[in-house]
Length: 195
Image (cartoon, rainbow, N blue to C red):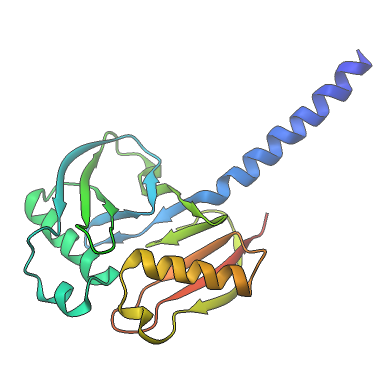
């Protein structure tokens, strides 16, 4: 019986630790113009796809002037989705450098409290939060910035550049909150989780 105690306790601690750390990739998603925006993340709640929109064939001058920066593309997709389905709950955005950006329009199956939660993607070992904030308590470590003309580049290029800077300047970092400034320098706030 004593032998079982020695096996059970480490398993219990391992399970507890995994539950604590597994929450680091959960985000509270921002609602922008009435839509929850899921970029580089996926909703935690069950949903139905009720439509799809893209930037294919668009004539939006904001996108053209910005050369495909994140905010004008996101805002165009929101505006287009609103015209297609006014009662939708959110957008899952897929951005492609020098390609056609698109989004699926979603409606949650239930009115659940966690409809505003998402599981964020990880790149180079770093969780990336975009248009959302970590659910887990965290501490600010520092900020990385784009330099020069990088702010005029498209989403994936800016994200990857900020990740590279993050890994150089804060090598032990595990999460970053990206902040995009249309026409300005985009930044990434590097954080560590308190737990």
